[in-house]
Amino acid sequence: MSDLRGDLVRLRARHEADVPILDTELHDDVALHARMGRRPWRPISPGTEASPYRVKEPRAEGASFSVVELACDTLAGTASLWDIDTHNRSAHIGIALRPAFRGKGLATDTVRVLCHYGFVVLGLHRIQIETLADNHPMIKAAEQAGFTKEGILRDAGWDTGGFVGEAVFGILVHEWTTA
Image 1: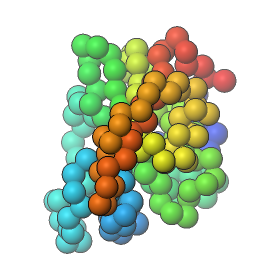
Image 2: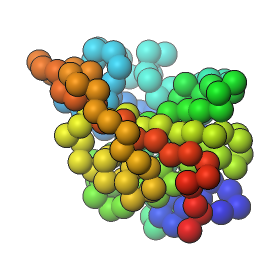
Image 3: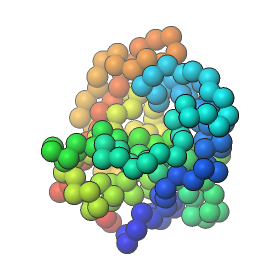
């Protein structure tokens, strides 16, 4: 892997044209946002600075990307390494795919490309994924990308009216393979 490209996806900087699509298909999906967000869903106006997908200047604590499906060269979603800790050389993965791009193996490929970026480009030692314990597609993507399930945080996630467990997965640089 010579750049941020996998078998099915490539990661690139966010473009202004991506923002309205991501706002409509990801942010405006209240149920999805409730399951993936760390803050309660709030409506936003089109073109507002409040968009979680707005184009931002690079920062040391995180790296946000747009996910592009290679087969059709189309925006498929968003991916990030967040809470990058340069002292402990660790970070967390977050991804969200547009509805039309789910179930096609893009999540696993995106996780693998983020691992390449984290381990090869940033020199990280550990990458972690937290997801709701009933998020079977993300759990499958984590496992297929070589992550180890480290445990369940009981009632750690709020999902529109109730608490659910949060599954924690991790991978260390020496466990990661590019194969």
